[in-house]
Length: 193
Image (cartoon, rainbow, N blue to C red; front, side, top):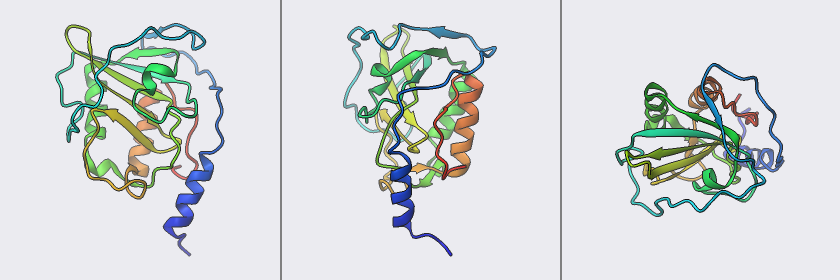
C-alpha cells in the first residue's frame, strides 16, 4: 500500500524536528582541511551580495575559488547566509573538478523532484569568491531536511515542498561527495536511505 503525499510530508517534517547542536568528528582525510575560528567566537562582519536576481545556472557569476564549510546545523538559520553564521572549524578549498561535479548536480533540474521538509538546519555551506577574493555567491545545504538555499537563488520553478527536494539518487551522490571532501554530513534523512 502506498503512503499518501501528505503522510510522507508529515513524516519528513517530524523527522527533522529533532534538532541537535552537536556534530560528531570524522577521521582526517588526505584533502587539505583548514581550520577557522571556533564557533563560540562571532565571525567578523562579512560583505556578501544579497538579493541577487535568480538564476537557472548557479552561480551565474564568474568565480575563482570555492570553499566548502562544515556548519553546525543550528535551528533557526533557514537561509543561504547560514554559511556565514554557523561554521565549525572545518573548511576545504575545493578543486576545480570537485566544484564542477557539485555544480553539475546542483544545476541539473533532474536532481530535484522529491519532498523537502519545512525545517532547514544546514550542515554544509559553499562560498564562491572572485579573483579579488570577494564573495560573489554562496549556498547552504541540509540533507536531513533535503534542501538547499542559495544566493543567487536557483529558478527551476519547483513547488515547495512537493518537488523541490533532491531525488534519492542525487541525495546519495551528495553524501558521497561531502564524504570525499572530508566534510561528512552526519545527520542523514532516514526516508532518503
